[in-house]
Length: 62
View 1 (tube, helix red, strand yellow):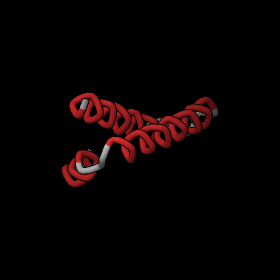
View 2 (spheres, one colour; view 1 turned 90 degrees about the vertical axis):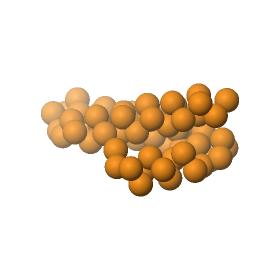
View 3 (cartoon, helix red, strand yellow; view 1 turned 120 degrees about the vertical axis):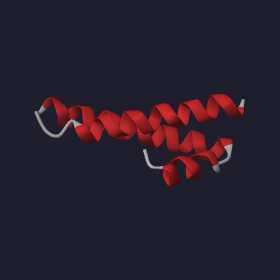
View 4 (tube, one colour; view 1 turned 60 degrees about the horizontal axis):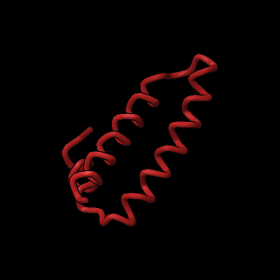
């Protein structure tokens, strides 16, 4: 992830972060279905890294 992307995630409040996490989980579920068809796996990997970072930030905030 890029530094600006990380900074913008850190700047979110808890409610916005929870909403973003739900959206990423939905996007990962959709990308997983596409991956099952043999399509691009880099998109899925990037989404998983973003979600992991968001969960880390949320854990630090609590």
